[in-house]
Amino acid sequence: MGMKVIGYWATTALLSFAVVSGGAAELARRPDNVQGLLHLGYPVYFATIIGFWKVLGGLTVLAVASWSLRPQRRVLGVLFPARARAHAERLE
Image 1 (tube, rainbow, N blue to C red):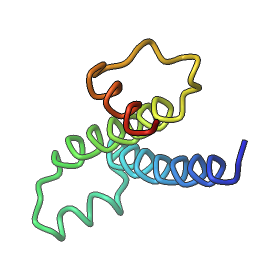
Image 2 (cartoon, one colour):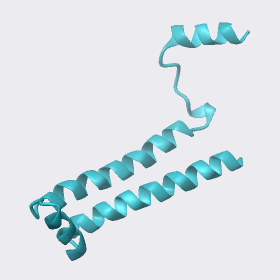
Image 3 (cartoon, helix red, strand yellow):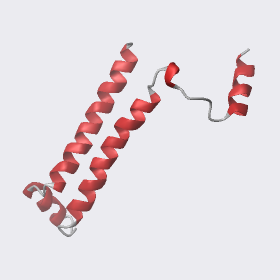
Image 4 (cartoon, rainbow, N blue to C red):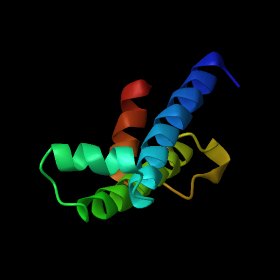
């Protein structure tokens, strides 16, 4: 693995961890998170909504990263054959 891939995964993992852990803390209704939301003027139930979407978003970032870094042999096919053909012709 190249340094670029390692850096990409490290950054993606840290971002996902921050988002998922923050969402989990809001789902658990940690007092500091609830106080922060109340201070901003949001109702307490908003922590559940935000927490759910943060966890889902963090997992989605990991899934998109996995998809974009998949090996070439795992590609099922070309999504837009005409565009891929035109790109290949420009490279020649």
